[in-house]
Image 1: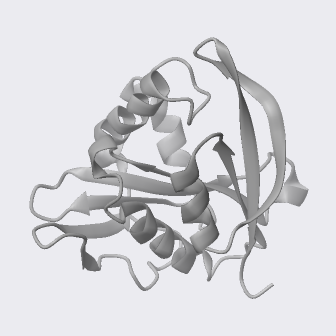
Image 2 (image 1 turned 60 degrees about the horizontal axis):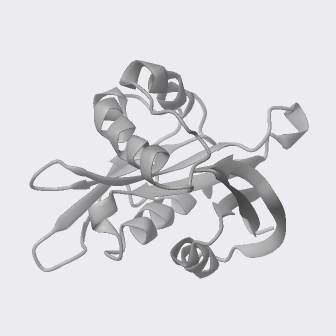
Length: 190
């Protein structure tokens, strides 16, 4: 797979997250589609973290994957167990809004396999994602976090995100309304 820009430092590095598990953070690709779809569908079915309410087939999810392979600002990184090849999580940067004036803003997200929480996978992914974005024409990163989600709020704070506002009861899922808190982070020395 070709990326529009050379991979930044951190791609392909192996990190130990436990004494017995080594994790490779690398660009995602079409070969990951089934595993990424399964991981995301867990959050669709089981949590309010995403406001999607119907699970996806890999073919339905394919345009999402391809949209992250077209532009250096819009990246998909995966964390993979080195020995088993299992996908432990992924992080993305994507368009913040469709209008041209928003081009230098990205919305970021991270999803970890349900059994890999608390292992530092999100931290590894965000570290690599922000290194990759450092060479791009990106002014701000934004993250929307469905509330409550203390683990995600802590992760974003660790990476320098600050709270900019909360949309109250903006989404309905599982027969209740959910708030989404928005965070932003300046990028590229701004």
